[in-house]
Image 1 (tube, rainbow over the protein chains, first blue to last red):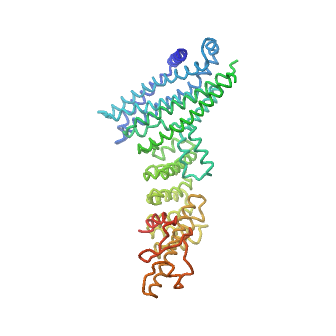
Image 2: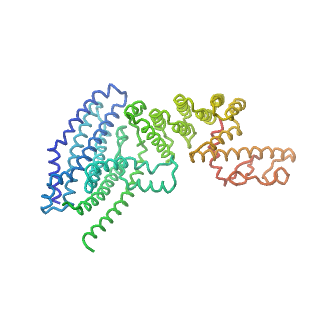
Length: 258
Length: 300
């Protein structure tokens, strides 16, 4: 466990050194601009726009970090040949992989938390006093973080057996497919053979369902998110993430690094 | 068994158990979402022109994606018996703005919008608006007049406008002659079972989508049953004139020589006489369930 934490801490430090958190400036500017202009360009939906825009920005910025940095976590170490020095120490490959995963998730957690606070402040500017229900913004941010963690796990898995470019492509494609996973189960208006429908139904459960973490519409309209929903979504991310990371660890441990 | 094989086996177990867990959790999450009664499929951008601008040169592809989304949205709502289809019109609006020549979106979209609940959204005004836009963008496509006539006839009960739509459509080269006949017949009689039967027959004969065909087939069976029941009612009235009493069952009409045998509905179930002496569908007939919807639609 100590090894995993050491790798995670180093990964976080490296991300900070690489100026990954500079995106926070972009986000802050976006929120400030939105808070100033939203009241002038819309009527009655200021809260909805601020929350939707803020959560979308958090999700998109996080997505870029998760995919592009996630894919480079292993391959960068290999390209720079630092991986060989690391693995020569008493460090198992799976520990290295898990450490990298937690390091980037920690970076994303700091990033999304900071953006979440920024969003909350922007919401306070356009709508004060705030209500208790506005705190659900943080629930939405938390669920976005879970989604990003799952994407990091997928990016890591792909980077374990293919090139950086293909890993980015596969992760992006799986993300898009995962967003539409729920739609596969409800293709009632489309006439397909029953065997195809059954196959799509099965695939919809195997694909990572990223819509499970999307409560943007609910939060933007001032509705709450039940605790049980958050609990199940967390369990989903943990179980699915564990499966992906176990597979990644297995693939990485069998990879010929010579 | 060596370490490598053991590792592989352990991974298989983890993957299988994990996916089983994911399956179970997904069902829990789905039920939580349903319990929240929220339109999760919110539409961030409702302006077709804005989406078109953002789509760059890929607007037709985006149009197809939005149309698919509309079909999925409507299908999902239908499956969940959820009558709140607030997003159907914006989705169709965006799809047809992105690709004004997406004929299928106008035709099926008008059916989804115009049909009365639970089959459709019960928004015939929007169905008319969609078809009129379709005609504006595709003025050579006479079938939109057929669809417009159907919406005015079945959903809006505006027979003068229905007749006018069929008349306009009939003037197009290639348009079938029956459109002219329908224009005259509707102008003269308004709504009738025969006209309804004929219009649904046209839908049935020309539809390529199995679901639309099935819907038309159900309507045809019900209308056929209604036509038969109208004849039986006439025979029952004749029986009453002859004998001076109500017929209580169809066997009496057979015995009196008015019927060759007990007539069957299109699903093969015998008609029965109700307490008021009028012909009815058998309670066991699958058509019974559909009849209520059709009657609601036929009554002004």
